[in-house]
Image 1 (cartoon, rainbow, N blue to C red):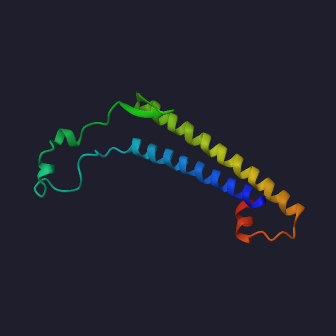
Image 2 (image 1 turned 180 degrees about the vertical axis):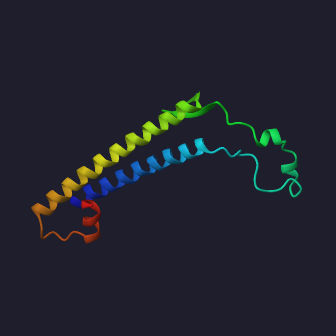
Amino acid sequence: MCCTATVAFLRQLVDLDRQRQECTQALATLREKKPAAAGSASASSSSAASSVSPSQVHAPPPAKLWVSLSSNFVRLPRAHVGELLRRDRARLDAEIEIVRGEMKERMKALQAIAPSLALDKGLLDFALA
């Protein structure tokens, strides 16, 4: 029973952390000023690079972006997308802290109820840290 609950908490933490990491990566992509079309190859070494004009390589980022919200694609202003991602990341941070708190409380209660229960030392340290 205790192992099943611990595994469920750990899976939930991993899923939430993965979502938070995706938000962080999306925010980093928004901040990037690099164009996606041009690589580091010089114009003389690649025929594809010579076909791209300098105005295309250094074009400003688009003012609006396509975003997937609840399985719908919506075109939103770039600044609004960044704010949505920051809010989502803050929500995920708060949710992760809540799950960690619940897991700590349950592990402490389990340790108090059955101190002789052979819990893995690494798991106990992780759960109560």
